[in-house]
Image (tube, rainbow over the protein chains, first blue to last red):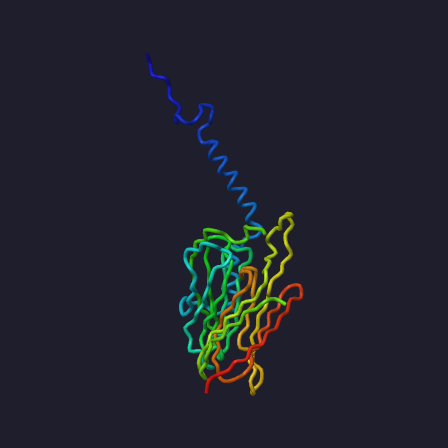
Length: 167
Length: 111
């Protein structure tokens, strides 16, 4: 007895045209589309992050170094994440940090906070607590009194997002 | 009036750099979040914070911050100040819906 002709995949019904999406793929695409529609209107993008960084730099070249953004790399609760920015600077009248800013990639708004310092600060170090909506990049930037601009970029993983809970 | 906490070191030597820690009770409503009825809650943020130090030479702005929706509820801010002498610290929080609060703290140095 000749063997029965096999369909290309035993798990695929024979009426399926080759190359057509499976039910599983179609469902996954639908879920992905829904998520995109929900998140899109209120999420900043990489382009907005770059734009915000350039606006802060005010024409200066953004250099990497001197700034340290200290945030836990694995965040349990995105509603309140301790963040500290410190900048290597003598904070003397001739050489000090004038401004520090924190930016994010995926929150609804790119800006997180900006701070203005003076030689009276003594040490260029600022701490606060921030909200993170999801796993993303964070950038801390510092502007010196000579106009130069320094940055530090980190990646944080967020397990519980902010902005989800309502009271 | 919102509750505030302002923390300075117990003893401060002249010329020493100290950390000033501040906390203020405030919801920091982002304006992106729907309430239980599905309607987006109006934004209510503290937008600006300023710290002035006043001594016999006058009042100086020593630190200022601009805050956005990504700052947690009950905003905590810690910053540094070189304690040059005795004086008064004035801390001002300003925000949406006419929010404004001012607190003053005496800064005393030893010797």
